[in-house]
Length: 289
Image (cartoon, rainbow, N blue to C red; front, side, top):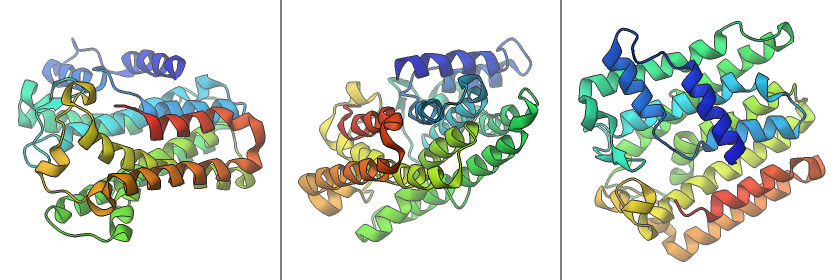
C-alpha cells in the first residue's frame, strides 16, 4: 500500500496545476484538498488490480489520479454547510473553512473536471486508446446520478428516516461502492483484462465496497476524532441511517466479515496471482481509521 500511495501522491503533485498559476487561490484550494493526506484506497485498488494482471503501472497513473481527484472533490462538497457541514477532514480544517464556501465549491468542480481531463489527454500508447475511453465512461458513471452523486442524494433524503437493510445497501452501493468498483475495473482495463476475469473482479469489488462502508459506520462509533481525522459520531449526531443503527454493532461487524468472505470466494477463479487483492480486503474490514 505504501508503494502505491507514494506513487499516486507523486503523480497527483505532478498533474495538478501549479499554485502560482492563475487563478492562484483556486489552484491553492485544489492542492489543499488533494495533497493533505488520505489513505488513497481507490488508487491503491486500481494499481493492485493492474499489477496483479501484469500491467505496466505507467499505464495506470492517470486513472489512479482521476479516481482520487473524484474522491477528493466529493469530500470537499460533502463537508460544505449545505451538505454534512463538517469542520475537520484528514486531521485538518475542511476546505471551505480555509477558503470559504464558494471557493471550496469551485475547487470541487475543478477537481471533477480535471479528473476527466487527465484521463483524456493523449499521453498514452495507441493500444490504450480504447481502454482510456472505457475508463472515462466507468469513472463518469460511478460518479454521477447512477453512482456516487445519486447515493449522496439518497443519503440526504434519508436523514431522520428509517431505511430497510435493502435500502441502506442500495444507497451505499451507489454512494461508496460505485467508485470502489470503478477502481477495480479501471485497473483491469489497464491490463486489457478479458471478460472472464473481469466478472470475478467486479463481484469482489461489490463486496469490498460494501465492507468499506460498514467499517466506516463502525469507526464513526468506535474510533476517536484524532484517529479518524474527522469528527467522531457525526453520523449519529445527524441521525443518519447506518449499519450499526439497523443491525447493532455485532450485526454490522458480522456483515462486514461476510462481505470479506464473499470477496475472497469471488477471487477463487483467479488463483494466487491476486493475493494482494485478498490482503486489501482484509485491510478494509480491519482498518482502524
